Image (cartoon, rainbow, N blue to C red):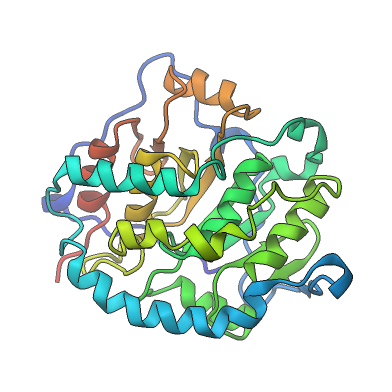
Length: 329
């Protein structure tokens, strides 16, 4: 994991920080166990073996090169039609409409916790041992996040947009290639590429062998691209003025297939901001924590321990992120 430097401060680009309201409980990040910091050279990880033919092959293993080629072709095209500078004021009607259609395309995946998942998930997941290197617009990264929602898992997310200054280099050093998603499970020493293998591993390890929900793996090939296309590549390319690095990770309460949470995750990716992803799909065991912190169960809800900023409004969050974490020059 790449050590995080203190954020660059630019008074002309920083709005007044909002302190937490009096009497409000502290963020979850204060109470949860933290992973020890490791350099990318100090990691001792085991590459998990892909499932055998009897378990069902992973279609992405053979299609990954083709998928990469498609993304390479789509990146400049989607960027051209993507509305330009993501920090500028947006047409909220269009934003919400395209994100809502994206959610419809991926229903029912990434919306709720699987039945009895709180009984199936083993205790070590509460210590945030999962680290996910990904980028929001990638259909195969979306597949993994949907599985994490279904299993009620939280993770440290390290966005790796095109043009990444930090996290893609980490992936190359620890994994040997620039491919996404990449999962690291610090509790087992496992490092994995290939989204299909990652999903099956998560269910074996944290779902007591339960199979992924019907269609979760197969549907990605058919509708996994819809959010990428409808959102015109948002969450794919690093913003030209990004580069400020927070001293502590931000924390986001999110539901993978939520219209407004998607818009915030896209911005976090375009700014390459690492964050703790608290998945709170319907039926999540963490919903009570969100309620006590935010006063409601609505997502997204973002907390920045570096400034004390907290908000559950996606437009307020976007404005804050692009002003607070921009660099001049």
